[in-house]
Length: 263
Image (cartoon, rainbow, N blue to C red; front, side, top):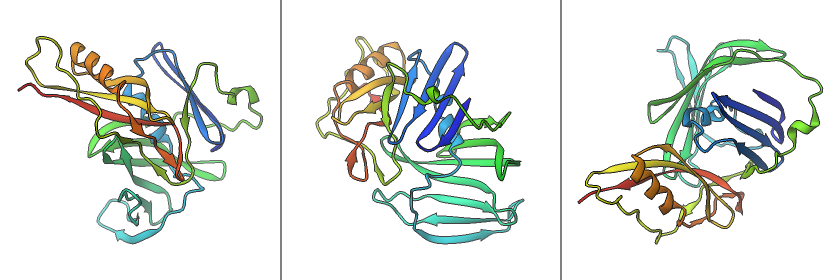
């Protein structure tokens, strides 16, 4: 469920079985509160899926616009000029209706990767058209899909819903030019679990705070019990140059892969 007034005033609640996440957006932060450390990665991807359009305050410079008529729906795609990290965005629209059919957004996890979302079955909501079916892919691998069941207008939501809940963790909300955290060159390597003679890897999500330290480390893809423990212990010691928004440090969520190689 999401209650949205503006980019600086919204609330999202995600429930998966007994796991509950609350997110509140303010002018420059997103406050997150989980009742469990086992929040599913697929559910964590839903905000990226639902953010159909980029922030209104962000300015794009486009280097090319191309037409495609060999698809079922004739589309026009606009590709941006490379950004500070050579990242590019791509937006594809239905030539007839103008509806956004797909977008490609570069993601930093911490390496840059392509994250593409596709939208379909548009229906009118008040004065706008909104997609009812969505799916996102990372490097052509399907990550999450969703259907919108209901949209409704609420003219006077309770203001208390937009107060950050006690105990929530702060993330930066950037409406300018973001830059991802950069790992320190001498961060420690993980040790193999005792008596292990196999290779493995663990994927973690974590927040790099404004001091460059890691917090809220969570396992999004397990490599096995011993590997998971060693991976979490290792990244808790890592340090970063913090992520920024318009050159100002902000708390930033990233995903990392910790590799274990047996020689």
